[in-house]
Length: 439
Image (cartoon, rainbow, N blue to C red):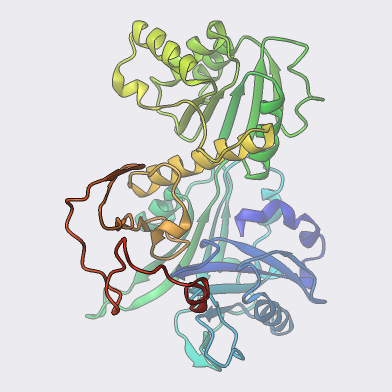
């Protein structure tokens, strides 16, 4: 539930009326990851979403039910059956959802709201066993008592987790939401004695934009929507203004190289930070790029034409950067989406950033400008791969070379799959009605 904790401030003011539903585990094609949560009030009002609409109605019913009983429950939703009556995910995945009255959570949740910019950690105990019920919807038979304060802990920055065990601490350090099973080693089969939902949040990843213009304004606005902490920096007071960049969290009037050096020395630039240079002025962008490309950053991009890029690379190479460093530079910046306006360019840049981060997280090589229609596997699986390129079949007497068609009357006629035989150059063309009939 840490993903939307600060959206739940109104809920915490009246905890007896609210329940929190949190995705615990997912498999297959599921639109939202583990840790996604939504709040449900006893009158059906909701905050957030966990599936994009597939099972929200059932989750609301389950949350209202747990408010009435005061119990913590775990529900599982799989693929809906053929009659379309049972509740399930039409995308074919499976998701387990923990539904918990807000009043059963520890009081530390209230304290967490006092630290909006600091990492938080939450450990909750899950039920162990389950039983099938009604159309593929599973509900766990054993529930946790309403007095669950001893079974949930909120760890604020500086709190120690020494008593939680190595596996729990490792899950906390990993980030996100994970289920950790504690086994009973006194029994030969080592059954699970406890199941813990371990959640940890992190401060938002930073996007630092050097160069204030219309493109930086659009990029800041779009990146903030994605949950990035956005900083815009420029040395020109006319352009580096809050009025021009309402989407940025901070607008800094400073020389870009000096700002980047100060942020790096202060430890505010890390491996999750993305740097985007939009200045178009080598006096400003070269010093930033030289240092940024030497650092371990999530993404470094620079706007400019291909001519500008080649000149920039030459200067950076002359300054001592190796090819391995220059390979990290995304320039010209963004995916080739045909973007022209500042808003479209912002989408292009952020799409490339997401693609690069996904490749780094999964360990797979990111193909440039992949399309979903050209991939195989689950839509929501980052490990999906591009489908093989379709094989082009040339007409008889024509050779395909890239985009060129080269006549070659000596080429043998290919075997035509048409049961009526190939229609050669002298054959009667198909009638329009015949060609359209199968459509």
